[in-house]
Image 1 (tube, rainbow, N blue to C red):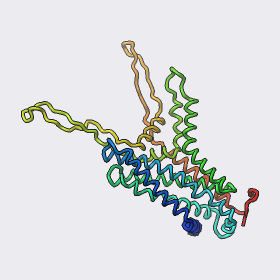
Image 2: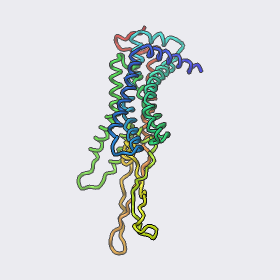
Image 3: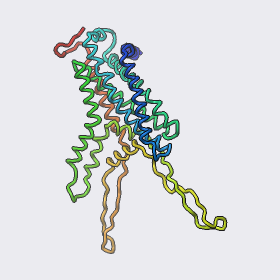
Image 4: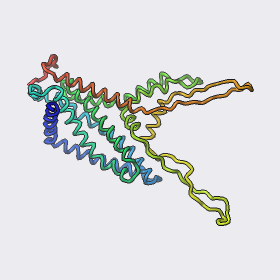
Length: 345
């Protein structure tokens, strides 16, 4: 209980500092307005040719990915100066000399930064809830999506806190945090593109197995983790009309409504999910054998692919845990190495 109490003390102190700063309240207000503007723009862009259900699914998937992008851009600002900012003000040493352990200090600062981010994420729930309330999106899909978004935000907060503990200046830690976010969003795609270019088969040759084996490079991508973790949207019937043959009761034939097949509604999350799982699927196998007539028989077989998000989320959580461990190490006393000009108290 002592550890929980210490974490709570540090977190409350951090949150009081943030609440007193007017810029955070202004930032949250701008955040709410920005998400509302994006929601209105998406409804206007998709409104036309879609049913109410399809419109809700389309808006929800696109808006959720945009919210995740905004959350990842917000997270570094919440924690990238938590440690070196106090070190520059000379208050970190006073905190370290109390009965609080380095783990409690690091956890308290992480809880404060992550908690502030969760408040911002909570402000987006009214906009994300509308497709759920209209029945376009299942509640379980919304719940899983928001939980995964919150976890990814926590990972970025942990990374930013680590850079704050390692770097002597807040500018350096903020820059390193945003470069890390850039690497998560763009760097993974670039790495996969380079890998695909190096392993692409030559012209006229068969498919290369290495093309599908590169899926692990995209697995940690936040968009991939979110899209693959969200449960699939139930398919909707694609209905039409047909005329039955004439009968005594209906000499001209009865016109009836039929639903011959079902297709999923437009879903950006679903498109990303299908793409990454197709990349993970192993190449097809062609089994050639002779028959009694001297011809060949080709057997087509493709192994089904499983989910990708557990691997990607595990990588991200491992990065966050490693960053938190480094932060705790950097907060231990006595300090063996300090950058030139660093203030202690």
